[in-house]
Length: 207
Image (cartoon, rainbow, N blue to C red; front, side, top):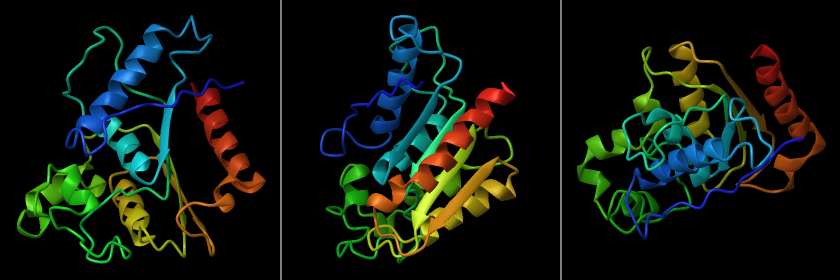
């Protein structure tokens, strides 16, 4: 049996990056504080999300120094799941359906407070997962899925992040779903759900 919590976090129209990840970190701390009330195991928590939620899930574990409104528990989890995550803005064709790519009113520009990312590569690196991974960065085990026909977030985005994780010896699995677009029933098939279940159970067994 699993307890599932849907995290409400400030979107880019309210607060710029990394507010979304900070809110998620505080949500994790809150759940840990109330684990007994929710009949949950505070030591066996996972975080995950789809599209921009995958980006938020990753940065909830990459960011370490944040505004902690629940002192006591840490914000670390045992595993991380990303479904067709919007994980990077470093690729020119990373968001093929976004006509205003990198401009101040683009999704990524809005996330950085309305910045023109064409002229600010440092901000691009700051919000791209693969640019924030190194040998010394600790991450939980990662499970990733991406459709090969994704027209919103190019599947190469997940591949680039996967390769960076492997380069720095992080535990990661990536599944490319043949013909799948940005979301859809393919990501909730029995096969995919069984992979997720095995991922979660393997971590529990190893603890």
